[in-house]
Image 1 (cartoon, rainbow, N blue to C red):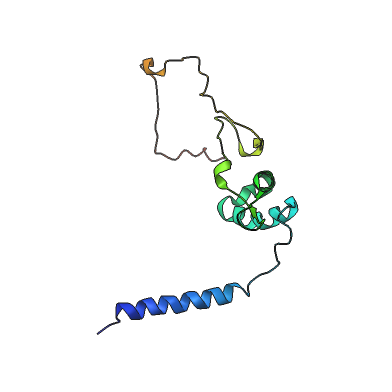
Image 2: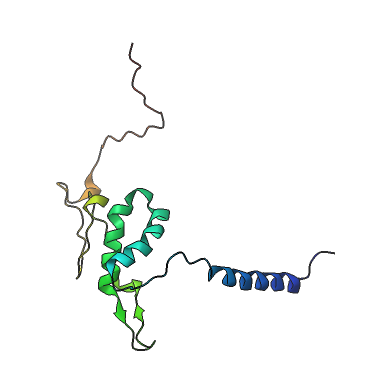
Length: 141
């Protein structure tokens, strides 16, 4: 009764072969020149939409600019353009916003936040309120 493990594996292999056959026919527009930032933006935009829907017009030019600046020709693979994600670092600046994002070549060293109280282990009797109630304004009459 039931399927044997070999039959299941054979079915997955057939499905993978069919998938590779269909994927090659689903190209909407070819990726012409990866050295142009406009082409990179066109390819990157659908990926950004999936993860950061409201930020595509801010993040897409930044990502394409960074990709363009770190791409290099590989000697090993017959002069193809390669991109290593290890050379890109993303730093969150406390108090910053996505709209103030920028790309820079070089080293970014985040500093700890500056506080009026440098030793935060000595803060005592702090008043903190945590509420799980929804607050709504009173209706107008």
